[in-house]
Length: 254
Image 1 (cartoon, one colour):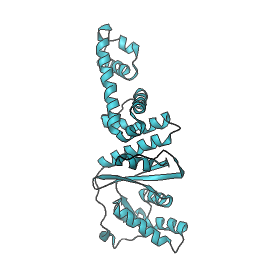
Image 2 (image 1 turned 90 degrees about the vertical axis):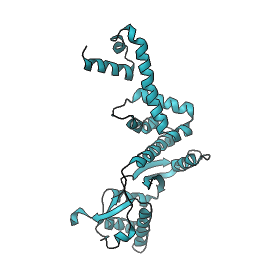
Image 3 (image 1 turned 90 degrees about the horizontal axis):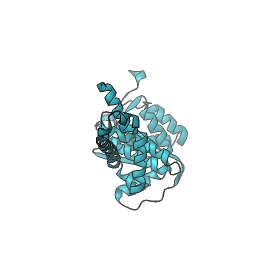
Image 4 (image 1 turned 45 degrees about the vertical axis):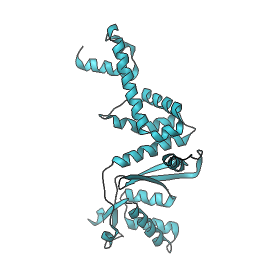
C-alpha cells in the first residue's frame, strides 16, 4: 500500500468510521484507530464549544453537544487550520433547528463577531479630512470588519443579554425581517439592528454606490425636504461607528 492510499483509508476511517478502511490496517491496529478517532472528534467538538460560548449558553450543555456531534458527523474539516471548521456550524444549526430560527441566527451573529475581531485593521475616517469631498460622486471605503446579517427573530436582544450575563428574553419572531450590522471599532466587536432604510443604503455603500445615489434613494423614501437631513445623520453615525475609513471618487470619475 502506497502512502497516498494509506492516508486516504485513514481519512475514511476518521470521517466515516469505514469498517473496510479499518480492516485494511489489521486487527492489531483497532485499539490505536479508536484512540485517533476519539481525539479527532474531541478536537472538533472542542473547537465548536470554544467558538460558540453564547450559543452554548442559549441551548444548554446537552442540546449544544448533540448539535455539535451531528455537525461533526456531517461536516468534515477542509482547511489547513481548525479555526475555519467553526464557520459551517450556523448552517448546521439552521438545519437541525428548523422551528427555532433564533438558534442559527445567534450562531451566525456570534461567528461574525469573532471574524470581525480578527479582521484586517482599519482606522475610521476623520470627519475633518472629508471637508472637501465631492459628495455627489464620493464612494465610501468601508471597514473590512463590517458584515450585514439578515435576521428574522429578536436574536440581537438575546445576544445582548447573554453577553451581559443577564436573563435573555424568550425567542420571538420580528414583525418583519431585518438586518443586523456587525463590525469592530478599535478592538471591540459591535452589533446593532438597522432600520430598513439604513440597511438598504448601507448595503449600497458596501457595493460601491456613490453617496449621491444613496441620497437619491433616501430622498425618494423620506421626501426631498427631509432626505438631506436623514442622509447627513446616517453618515454621521457611520463615521462615529468607524464603519467608514474614507471616501474616494467613483470609478466613472477616475
